[in-house]
Structures are given as C-alpha cells and as structure tokens.
Image (cartoon, rainbow, N blue to C red):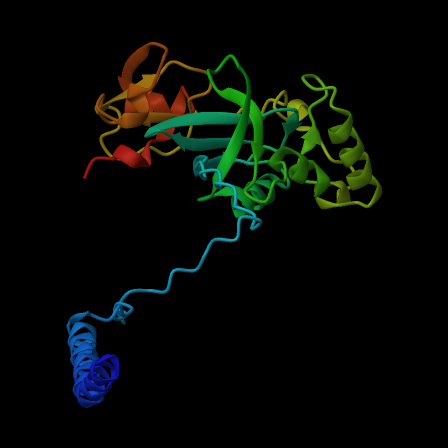
Length: 277
C-alpha cells in the first residue's frame, strides 16, 4: 500500500516539472519586459545646451591686483592774455584775473628785450591750462603768484633762467631765482648779452625828455573842435568823445579842451581807437 502511494507521488511530480519550468520562464520574460518599459519611460539627465551668444564665465583670480581708481583730471586756469613778460590774464570759472609773476621783473615793452621777453612767455604759456600758486595782491589789485606750466616747470624760473627777467630782489629773497640769474649772467643769456643792461625798476624811473609841441601842426578846425583828456600823468592821448572806452577807464578828472590845445599845450596825440569816422 505504501509503495503504491510512493509511486503515485513520484509519477505526479514528474508530470508537473515541465509545467513549472514553463511558468518560471514566462515569469522571467514578463519581468524583462516590465524593466524595459520602465527604462524607456525614465528621462535621461543631460546637460543643458550651451548658448553661443553667452560669454564664457572665467573664474576670477583672487590673487590678481585690482587697479586703483584714477584721480580725476582737474583743469587748471587757462592763460588767455599776455600783457608783457611778467603780467598775464587767466580765465578761471568764467572770470578773468590778472596775474603778476612773483619775484621776477621783465624789461618794459619799450625797453630792450621787452618784446622778446613777452614773446618767450607767450610761447610757453598762452592758450594753455596752468596751475597758479597764489600769493598776495599788489596795489593795482593784481594777483601775485607763481605760474606752473603743464610740464611742471615754473614760468617765473624759466624767464630768469633764459635771461628774459631779473630776480626782483626788492620783493623776493628766493635763492633759486638768485642762482638762476647768476647763471644767466655768467653764460650771457638773453638780456645779459647787453654790456650795460638796465634793470626794469630803474628804467621806469627814467623820465622822457620833454617834447615841445608849441609849434606842432594841427588838423584843420582843431582850434574850434572840442576834445577830452584824462588829467593823468600816465595818459598821452586825447579823445573825440566821452564814450571812448579808454577814457571811460580814467580814474582822474576828465577835462575839455580844444584839439589844438590838446596837441600844443598838453603834448597829446589823438586816440586812434575812437577817432571820428
């Protein structure tokens, strides 16, 4: 009986083995299919496309020196006029100021080397932006100071160095100016070529010889025509109108005389800037 049951169980297992093998293979195939479907539905992680118009970002080297901010350029005073070798007009903030150079004295315009000194100063400074080191003001209201040229040189010193100015010792004890004048004298630069140069302050003290115009010729109608004089020793002209710009600057009394008197008694000549048409 037992043997019969044992043979029956063995026979049954042999029949079921192929069916189990088929079921396992079917299960594995279904698993592979499901895994493939999952992988197809999972999006791949890809790098974003590069923008060709966007510049490459280069990491900053922290050891690189950062340039310092440059100081703004401050324009100086512009030289707009050269009256003579040591007197200038500067334009500052829309206003004109008259500057007299400190410590130097150039020859007068009607003195030897006067025009050459003016031209030398004009070549160095006219139309340029300069720096003014201000001092005091003189009795004429002019600013006394030192003009520094765009290249850093002192105009005061250059005039003395090249023999176009004297060291004005009455108002300056500057040793640099004194040494520059000594060198200019030694090497006979500029006015020092003259065997007997006259200092400007001495030249200004010289009085011109009196002129006798008592018999000078006068224009027709001069004995009746009225003209106007500035009663100042520094004036040498007469004016046909009180509206003349030169006469308006007169700080003394304005007197009225005939044209003949202006010529013969006051030794005046006609102001050509406002002559009658």
